[in-house]
Image 1 (spheres, rainbow, N blue to C red):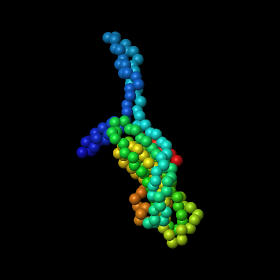
Image 2: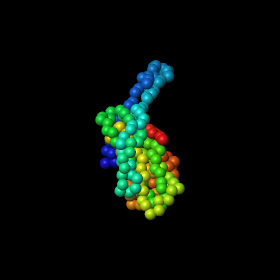
Image 3: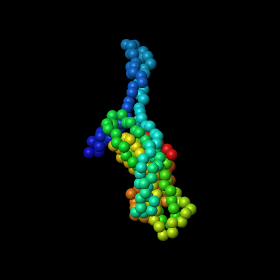
Image 4: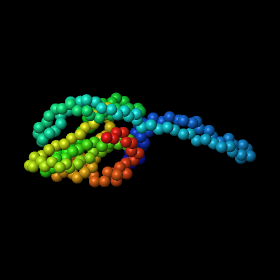
Length: 191
């Protein structure tokens, strides 16, 4: 079973890349008296995806206080991802939210990292000075992507607020340690 999964992973990895041969193979010429001439191995350019980043005006619901949602027009980052052999693309909103108490907070999507067919949305949650008294507040940020079907994982830098709502994301204190574990990461968006 492990061999089968390994073969599937290799097929997915190869099918998500666009490989173009830059030089042709040149094998050594061999004489009967074992005199060889220099050889040349092929070289390849491997491209993961063609990524275009811009902004798009979109009307979205922004949480102000828990249960109350207001609509506002805001500029939202827009990322267009073209992957080789990927098929149709779909426009998706990648949103991250946190529910906080005691102090007001901000949350911002700082970067998006691609590895194979997974996007890691890296956000930062910061505590601000304003007291909330006994109120709960949800803070959010979003990015719009136009891409083929990809796995999305949210990673939040900062202290996890003690609310059940916040269990849907992974919180880390050391983002560099997390990033060092990623295989062949490519940063496709930074803010």
